[in-house]
Length: 61
Image (cartoon, rainbow, N blue to C red):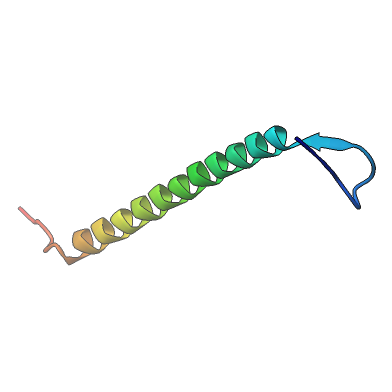
């Protein structure tokens, strides 16, 4: 099965090629979203730890 691609130009593109490209894009976006989530989570943990360290009483001997 083929479909004509317009207005990009002329030619035919196989539907299987479009499906593979769509799957690759979805996989890439999923990885990108996960990595953004992990970065945000690490930033929140860092801020929480910094806040806890500020609240500690000073240890003088």
